[in-house]
Length: 251
Image 1 (cartoon, rainbow, N blue to C red):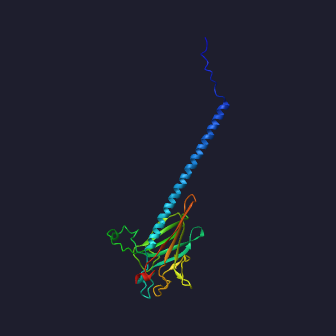
Image 2: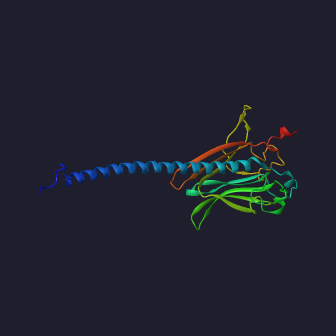
Image 3: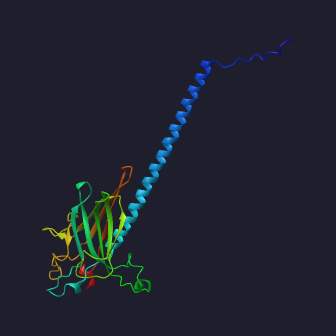
């Protein structure tokens, strides 16, 4: 009996199989590498966008509060009064042994942290509160926390009391500087943001109008550092015009 007709096809040799497998592995590695690179880049972009958005929100909150800063004259009308008002800002130790700002002030704006109390729910918010911002180290976790403090009721101590809320654990720089216009010997106005500390009480501005109770402008600078180590930063300036910042406007 004759065997069936031959097809004329030959089986792959071992060398051909090895070459095919090697080429397939190389192509697969290239495709995977390209995909991983694109995916990693996408994650970095998303992280950067998230950081930038967080920074914008923090900057807006702080600037909105600072724009509403108030100097309460009736607090210091009595010469024996020890009440604090206006702005108290100082430089303290921050992340990586840097110096950062710590600021407390009176602000005329609705409460953010006391919307749960009955008077606020009924529309009786006094719209005048103590506000504070600071970077503090959580020693239990070794993490720097950016906090906002708000005291519903104003009292003699501008720097304590009220509720605190952690806004971020990514802030590595928080700097507030102040500008005052001064006249040179030639009569020209000179402006600078060289003063990083401000204490309205120490300026004795109520008795001496030449010592400004509030600055002409405030410059806010902030930086955030993400988990990947990428840093985003921003710096903005707001002009203040609150009595007696420019008393000529209120005559």
